[in-house]
Image (tube, rainbow, N blue to C red):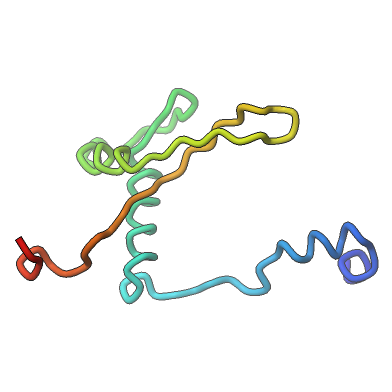
Length: 104
């Protein structure tokens, strides 16, 4: 493996795409990561599409509705498919202060 990643052109190109070590943080101390963790949890346990057959947790329906409003649909050319659909989540946080400390 060492020879492949260091001595072949394709291996060197692919090695440039590898994160050398994972990014471990405490989500309770890192707001952006905590938000991503919460969205991942809600999607994992409460969101279902036609292909997803495992049961969901109905008590998460209200949160799923809120998370679904953050969905973003993009179309990219991937391989031979010029209309490959990519779903992600997006949102804008304009003020991280608690509501009682915000203006207006």
